[in-house]
Structure formats: C-alpha cells, structure tokens
Length: 98
Image (cartoon, rainbow, N blue to C red; front, side):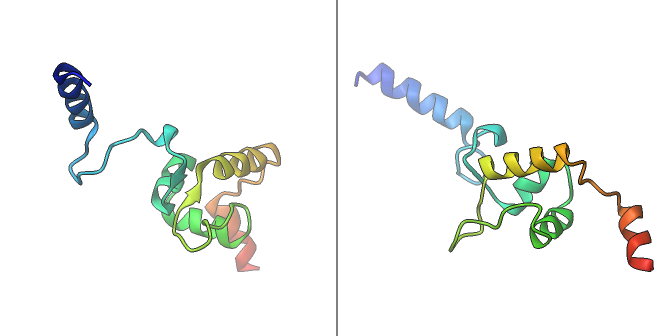
C-alpha cells in the first residue's frame, strides 16, 4: 500500500470515527443494534421496544449478548405493520383498566 493510500484510508476512517472512538456506521448499515438503537430504528422509546420484546412482538437479543439482529428487527417490524399490531398507549391503558 502506498503512503498516499494509507493517508487516504486514515483520513476516511477519522472522518467516520465518533467521539467514543468507535466507527460511526449509519444505523441502517449495522448488522446488530443495541436495544436503544433498535428502538430508535422502530421509532419508539426504549421502554416500548422492551415491552415488545417481552410480548414476543420483537425477537430476543442474540444469546449471550445485549445485541439484536437488525434483519430480525426489520422483519418483525414488517410483520407487525402487516398485522396492524400497533396499539396506542391510550388503547393499552384502556385495556388494562378493565
């Protein structure tokens, strides 16, 4: 690799690097997500996403990790959308109120 190639690669890598020192890969290109990232991808709060996981609407994280498969989340979200499984907070409150 020529020096110019190394400098270009280093420059591109530094441009992608976040404040935490990790590479800032766009959410849409990541293979796995944290619960917070998965919730953001679904457009809901972390607590709503966790409730969906408990209810079986979303998959469990990979065994031994706290990471969720982005592909599985997308698929589950698509199924929820097709089944119109989205229930508003008000509807949930009414149902639990009896």
